[in-house]
Structure formats: structure tokens, C-alpha cells
Length: 125
Image (cartoon, rainbow, N blue to C red; front, top):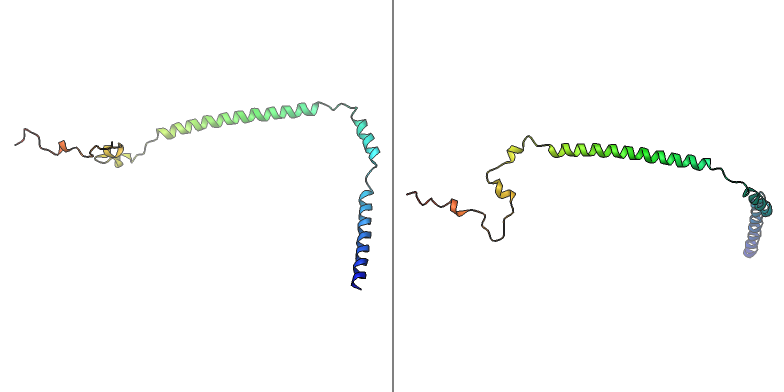
């Protein structure tokens, strides 16, 4: 019984898919007619006006982009110059005694402190 039910469902599915295929093929024109229409169209030369308009628009976009980029580069250079010239008003507060030691890199094997400054001068009693 179960097998008969499956066969009936299969037959029903085949019929439904067959109807769908026929519906899909209905509005399609015959190949020969489509081929003849395409062959007839190849005889005409396409107009060059759309290409010329598109090329002119592309050239205008490139020119405008170059002008805008040039302006932005000039503004960026001016801003960078102003930024490099800026000095902090509190920079003097950061100077401490012995900052020359902090700003240099010691060489290997050299002492950090100068001992001659700690020794008394030879002419002092």
C-alpha cells in the first residue's frame, strides 16, 4: 500500500514538473528568428557619440580630481610647516640640571660622572 502511494506521488510530481517546463518554454521565440534578428542588426554601425560623451566626462572627472588633490597637498604642507614651528609654552619647565646627560647616549666603558670636578683644585689649601 505504501509503495502505491509513493508511485502516485511520483506520477503527480512528474506531471507538475512537465507542466512547469512547458510554461517556461512558452514565451521563448524560436532560435532561427532570434539569430536572423541579430544578424540583421550587425549591419548598422553604432554611433560614436556616446563614447565621446563618456570620454569627455571621464577626462573632466580626472581634471577635477587632480585640482582637488593639488589643493589638499598645499594645505597639508602649510599645516605641517606650522606644526613643526610650534613650541610649547611650558618647555622651559622641563629643563632640569644635568639634562645634557639625558640627551646623550653614553659610550660603552665611559664613566657617567666626571671625577675631576669632584676633586679639589691643586691651588686650594
